[in-house]
Amino acid sequence: NAGVMQNPRHLVRRRGQEARLRCSPMKGHSHVYWYRQLPEEGLKFMVYLQKENIIDESGMPKERFSAEFPKEGPSILRIQQVVRGDSAAYFCASSPSGIGGYTFGSGTRLTVV
Amino acid sequence: DQQVKQNSPSLSVQEGRISILNCDYTNSMFDYFLWYKKYPAEGPTFLISISSIKDKNEDGRFTVFLNKSAKHLSLHIVPSQPGDSAVYFCAASKQNYGGSQGNLIFGKGTKLSVKP
Image (cartoon, rainbow over all chains, first blue to last red; front, side):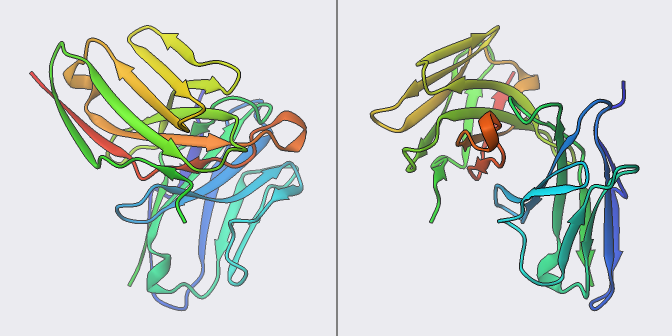
């Protein structure tokens, strides 16, 4: 029973490029959450999705960031026209019901050069 | 404005002794609290949680205490082991979405070092 799978583990992008981060939740989990961790900081909530629906995107920057969780396939966090300040660890978590502790993936470390 | 605060960035404890990690929160609407452990280059791992209707929850070596009037919770690890060395995050949430936690508000973490 694989855990939450995130890929890539490390991603390097030049300023202005697009970054696509993928998250496959645990089997049977239909709730997905994305968090961002800046250096020396705690995790900050970005977005909460269920299949094909965005439930809460109150933590998402208004521009350049988008997320989806299609009926088939992984959840995608997309960052357009990346800037140096986007450099961070991005964690995805999933849960079967939205209640109780999440299961986190190992994260994608995005570096913008 | 930080709603969940972990005021000690680090804590060092001798193996076999008790580790006490503290967490304060400001939002009285929080009603569910969790602790996560994180090793470098890995995602956080859920440890233990507590609902606001309780003041204590125990799971093996880990016990979480909640003091609602003080808006304070603590994680006790007894006995501490070198493998417990990690960063510990406190998190809080409100019951939204018809009972689901929705998003969690995390503290900045406390780095625990357990020395042999």
